[in-house]
Structure formats: C-alpha cells, structure tokens
Amino acid sequence: MRTYKPWLSVLIPVYNVADYVVECLESIVLQAIPGIEIIAVDDCSTDNSLAILQDFAQNSLVPIKILQHPHNRGLSAARNSLLDAASGDYVWFIDSDDKLNNDAIQSLYALIGEHHPDMVLCDYSVLRSTRKLKHYSRAERHIITFPGASQVLMTDPIKLFEGIYQKRRLHIWSKISRRALWGADLRFPEGRLLEDVVVTPRLCLRVKNYIYVRQPWIAYRQRDGSILSKPNQKKIDDMSVASKGVLALWLEKHPHLSADARFTFAHFCVRTHIFVSTELRKISGNKRPDMSIYRQHFLNHIQWDKPRMCWEYIKRGRVLNLRRFLLEY
Image 1 (cartoon, rainbow, N blue to C red):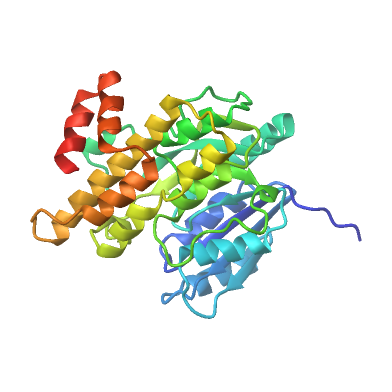
Image 2: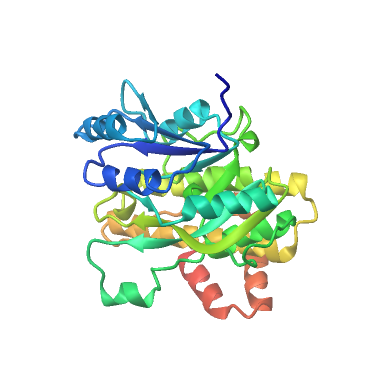
C-alpha cells in the first residue's frame, strides 16, 4: 500500500490542560483534511490530561499520534520532541489550551498550494473566561501580528525582521513554517521561559519567502495564574537574555540591516528592559532594584550605547519613549 508524506504536521504539547485539551483537539479534527498528521506529547501531566487525550484519540476518526515524556521536561522539550517526530512539509505548533478558528487549515492549504512560502504568519483572537470593558478596547477579537500587506508573497528579509519586532508578536504558534527550515540544529532552549523570543528570529533568518494573512486563525486562551502572568525571578532572568545574539546573527547575514530595522529591534529590547525593571520592583517590595546586570544584557543585545539609543529616539520624535527609557535605565 502506497503511503504519502503529509503536507502539514499539527504539533500539540500537553501538560495539565484537562479543562481545555478536548476543545483544542476538536477544533483541529473537525476541520482536518487529507494530508495532515496530528501529534501530541504529554509532558508527564499530573492531572488527567493524558487519559483525556488517549480517550479522544481512540474515538477520533482522524488519527492522532500520542507521545509521552517519562518525566516533566517543560514546553521547550515537548516542542522539540514533537518536531523530531514530525514528517510533514510544514509544521504548526498549537498550544493545548488554545484552539484553531474555523477554516484555518483549509485557508492554509489553499495559500500553500498557490504560493509555496517558507513561512505563513497569521493573526489571532484572545479567549477569556470573562471579558472586561478594557479587553474590548484592545480589539482582542482580532490581534494583528504583522504590519505587511495581507496574502502577498514577500521576499524581503529585513521587512520580516522589522515586522515581527514592530508588532512584538514572536510566538511560534502564529507562524507556520517549512519543517526543513529547522534542520537538525534549531530547537527550543530547554529549561527556559520566553523560548519563542529565542527561536522565532532565528527561524525567520532562514526564511526566503513568506506570506502574511490578516485573519485570526488561532484563538489564544489568556489564563489567570499562569507562570508568565506572575512576577518571578526566573521569568525576569530568562526574559533579560532572550534576545541575546539575535542582532549579531542578523548582521552577519545581512550587514546592511537598515537603521529603522535596528531601531525597531532596539525598541523591543527597551520595552523588555522596562518590563524587567518593573517586575524586579514587584518582587523587591517596590524598592529600586540593582539593574546593572540587566542593563549590560540590554546593551549587549542592541549593540548601541545609551547616547546612541537616545539619539535614535530623538531623531524619530519619540520623546515620550525616550523619557520612559531614561527613567528605567
């Protein structure tokens, strides 16, 4: 019997998501079309996520491959295991508490069939158990992830670099990529938070052509009490080094990286630095924390000194941004 290589691998890391995993799986299975493989890995859940996953797979008309970690290794390791097991031409990581919006897979299939891009970038919506007035004001039903034109094949790597940092949407689940781009050497950093900030710009560096779709294909679930929603030292430390080496890699391949692209990246790092300072104050009782180590990380990332950063803000008329930068620096 002849077998065909799948065109898409949907990769789902699972850990303690008993309340959400069925909704996630249903959103994928109900719109699955031929040529898709679905792979999930249970990262040693302590609730009944694995049992729910196994029961769903047993009763699903669409095959679901289940992997298991013998002990908890974290999100990065789970994604790495999924990537190693994938065989599709393209890979799409879906977090198991999120879900796919209607027609996402069919839209992706049509897009790939027409343009054959290395990467597809999509928008997303936000799922909340309760939606307050401030959430409506943020237009959370459609979060735009990229500033470029929709459904136009693009080949400018500098615009890709600038775009992901301008919108600050570096999460891997809003980017469907050719599996071949990952090779054997690009993987998520195990034991680290903010792993997407580390991996996404390195993946984008390998992209030759890409297409952005101004449609919310993902429904991202915002959960209270998640590790990223609370101030803690590990999050602060990992965040402060997540952009380490990114600019150097891009300058090595694209030595004429535009000043605007560099500024956009630097401003992203400034915002990260400000967030680190704010989080440090929260865990230190609102006392002004020692920022010397984090300041050095920041300067190493952007490869500009403080006067140059100030000048870049001034010549763009970004006075309020400059003031905030100086207050937190």
